[in-house]
Image (cartoon, rainbow, N blue to C red; front, side, top):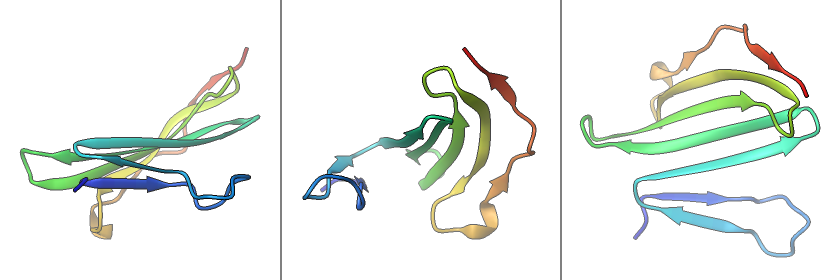
Length: 90
């Protein structure tokens, strides 16, 4: 049985695309202005599932900044990042 599970519940497809992973999974959604990327991984040192959500350039457009990170299921561990970024354009 996989440790992580990812799905795209809303898309043009008739079925829901899914993915399973054991140690880590990464997913993203992109538009013309940039991409939002989420990483989930198991930290073997702490025994916890951790996450990081970032905004990154897509096709040369958009900012690069980590939005938040923390431990999955523990809202008090969420670290929100400052609103500054590095702008990349083509």
